[in-house]
Amino acid sequence: MKRCPTCNRTFEEDWLAFCTEDGTTLVDESPARADEPPATILAPPPTPPAGDWAQPSGGFGSGQFQSQPVPPPVPPSNMGAPSGGFGVAQFQPPQPMQSGWQPPPPPPYAQGPKQGLAVASMICGLFTIVFGWCCSIGVITGIVAIVLGAYQLVQIKNNPEQNTGKPFAITGIATSAVYFLVWILLMFLYGFAIFMGSLNQ
Image (cartoon, rainbow, N blue to C red; front, side):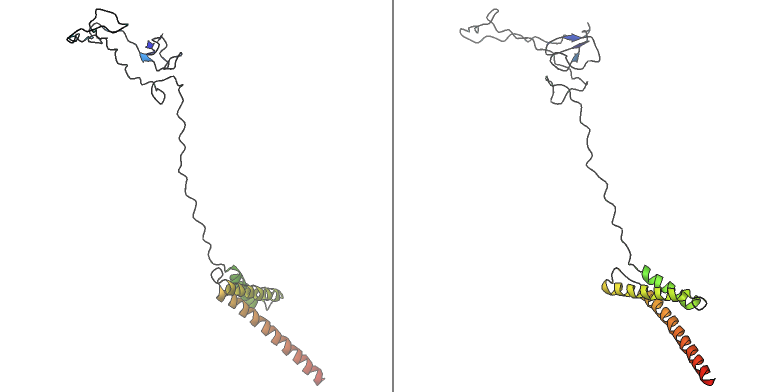
């Protein structure tokens, strides 16, 4: 059984934690056992002061001060009283705590210097100087090697921190240039041989 310390109303329901009338936290009311001492102790009446002592207006009794019984202390309740102690405020459930911690952002991805065009120029130049003699595709790869190498050299000159691969670009340009110079020389010799043959006839 539970009792409201404010309105002294009793409740049979054990699951109630607050009074339905005023919202005060209920206390457990258990019948006093015979072997327990009385809840209050009456103090002896004090000695009246000397002289004519008048009873205060509105009082009752014999004119001597009578001590009032001390009310029993209210035992603490573990039923989850609302914040602020006893009162008529309605119970408010605790708000969920929002975590202020957030994971740190990932570190910025550091990109390395760009040298892809220089490597491509070197590959095209080597392909041209090795396999360009047996097929006409060497002319195309030679031109591509020279263009990519020249473009990468310009980028390296303008922004050397972001662009590298100067040796690769120079290798691609040099091999392609040798290929074209040899072809020009061969064509010149072939034309000179034809011209000399026509003169001998």
